[in-house]
Structure formats: structure tokens, C-alpha cells
Length: 328
Image 1 (tube, helix red, strand yellow):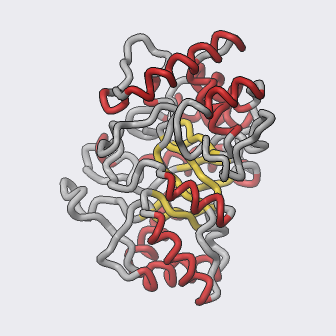
Image 2 (cartoon, helix red, strand yellow; image 1 turned 90 degrees about the horizontal axis):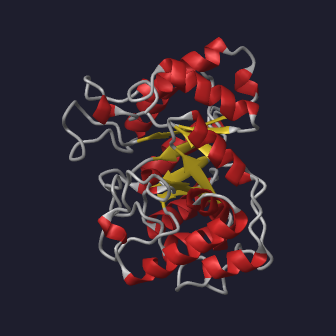
Image 3 (cartoon, one colour; image 1 turned 180 degrees about the vertical axis):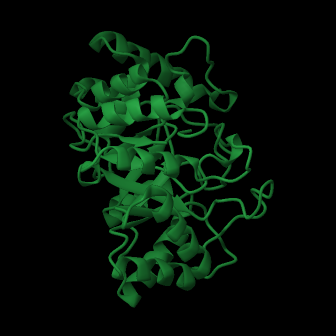
């Protein structure tokens, strides 16, 4: 919500604190936040980050920029039926726009934001490949795409000699939504992280980035209730164990969720708008969950984390060496 719900002064303070405390990745998108701006189009987040970079000489060398394309409304009020999409021309136009708004020559990770079956996979991966070959995109990732299309795209990328998708970005948290439902704010059929996504990531050595991991503060904010889509029997046990672990180690439930994701090899993305939220998240990034606590959190029911075939889940506790990501 940088540039819309979060003004420049507060956004600069968040970005400064993030970097001062060791944060590296800043995640945004060309469509952020079209739903909150009178223009009906996005770009406000990238523009604000660009202003921040210009106001902080040398900062570009200290941070990595991740942005997404493909979900910008084709015209104000046309989303979701009409989006920019992932044709070659749309990709090049969107990327040029992102670079201009951010004021950068290159980005460290470029995501395709939502799938576009009107464009062939070969056209999409070829356009992305041109950007990586040109050196203006270091890595490519896929967000809100079905696992089979990501794997198909990776096969095409390999055959064409282009860099393959090496990261997935999906919605996930400790609580699991009821089957057949979408969590609030997730409008993509393949937005939630599934067993298929997780298995693909493990087998292909891909990173997994998790958006909305804290359910908009519902784990700890008494003024916010856990959304109805999480009202299912398995989550009763999950909430109980989550509360027990938080009490035992003296942190909040949200901090346990972030530490749990990191311990399972997932990069949680923080969308907070307050400094205290950022500080709490960065403290969670350094939290080492006791082995028994991690075992209990992982063993509530069958999830991508509890599968014994999962090569990422630690049996002895621990955390990822990478800090979380600030997404605005």
C-alpha cells in the first residue's frame, strides 16, 4: 500500500528501518495498489520505492528489488476480467514501465503475477528470456500459477536456453483454509500454496515466498478475527498448539508463524504498515524454534510441512538464513 494507504513519510521510515536491521529484499508489483487509487491503475508503490532509492544514494547496492507484472488492469475498472496479461508486448511494456517508476536499470527478480492462458507459454517465457539475456532481469519467478504450468514453462525455458523459474510466490500461513475456499484478498484460483506447489519447489530446488502469512494481523490483534474460511476442525488443534508454543517461548503467535515458515524453508513476505509490526517480524526472523515445538507445529495434520518426504523441513529445529521480505 506504499503511495496509497501508506504515505511517503511512513513508507520511507519502514524502508529505512528494514535496511538498517539487515533486510535485503523489497517486493512490489506494477499493479500496486490500483484498488486504492482514484486512477484505477497501479504504479504508486513502484514510484514511491523509486523516490526512496533516489533519496538514499548508494541504497540500490544494498537492496534487491523484486517486482511483478501481468495483473495491471487493462483499463480503470476492467480488472479482473481484463488485465495486461503475459504476451510478449505486454511483458516488455510492463517491465519498461516498472524500471521507469523504480528508477533502476535492472531488477533482481521478476515475477509473472497471474497466469494468462490467452498467451502461449512459449511467448511468455521467450519474452522473459530476452530480459534475462539482456541482463536487465537477474531471476524469474511465478506467482499464482498452477504447478503444472510452471513445470511446463521450466521445460520450455531449458529447451530454449533461458533461465528457468526458480521461485514461487503464493498465499500461505499456519492455519489452512477450508478446501474449496480462498482466503480473504486471494482472488486467484491457484493463489493458495498447495501440496503440488510445495512438491515442485522441493524437487526443483525452487524458493517459496509466502504472501499474507499473518492473516492481516488476525493472530494477535484482538480487533481482528480469524477469517471464516479458516473455520475447520484441523485449525482448532493448530491454534491451540500455536498458542502453547508462543506462551512457552514468550513471543506472539504471529512471530511463531513467521519463525515456523522460515524453519520450513519458506520466505514470508511482510505487508505491515507500522514500525512495530516490522520490528516484531524482524525479531521473528532471528527466532530459533525449539525442536520439540517445531515437531508439534508440523505434526497437527497432513500438510506440505508434515510429509516425511519433505526435504526442507528440519528435524532438529532451526531457521532459514534468509530474512523475510518487505512487500509493499
